[in-house]
Amino acid sequence: MLNFVWQKILNKKWLISCLLAGAILLIAIASCNPMYTHAALQKTLTDQLEEQMLESGQYPAIAHVSGTLSESRLEHCYSELFTSYEKGAEELAALYEKEAVEKVTLLCSGEVNMKLDTTRTGMSKLGISVNHMFGIEEHINIIFGELYSEEKVDGVYECIISERVLTSLGVVIGDVFTSEQSDSQGQPIKYKVVGVFEASKENDLYWVNDPLDYESDFFVSKQAFDEIYMNDMLYSVNVNYYAVFDYRDIEIEE
Image (cartoon, rainbow, N blue to C red; front, top):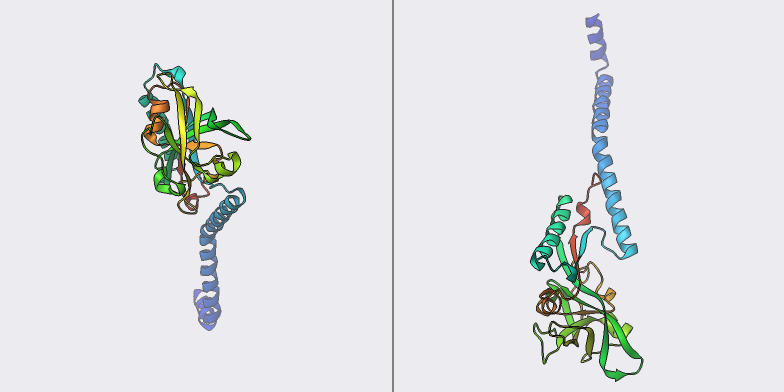
């Protein structure tokens, strides 16, 4: 019987070879199917994230931690509170098990009423947020005026603004504003607009929010922000940490 089967195989060796090759190919396709399916789904995910980014104008892979340093928490050391927020941001970023391509820290005062020191038709009090972004100097071009000074100049804190502030609020370089807030000596805090900035390059992941979105914001140096808000903690401060990841590294299992 076996000899008969063997003779049949020898007489139809090409047919048997084709059947064997077909079986091998079928097994190979069945084995590789999960891999190709995974690749197709991964490509679909990446395409969808890119489409979402184009439609919304927002980068799709950002972890954000925010909190408030409040004057009501003076029993705590400022540095300890600040460090706790930093630690929380790092822990959140670690959950992604990916290396962040950019990390951004934004400090802001929230809306503060300010009044222009000189009379100008149509401008009364403005609601302004006083901000500082760590490392902002490395990510901007000053298109009008100059960068702020680290220290007070003639008793006034210098600040820079986005182009949007020029158009939306009518603020111009050289304007001096007096805040409704006072320093630890009870003196009103003054700000002078000295420059207008733009992002130094397109698609810079540092700008988790477009510079033009800061339409009612004054940006000051870190030293100035510390003197105004951090050293004495007279007013609340909003703290925002952003960790930006490469969305192309996000896998469908995540």
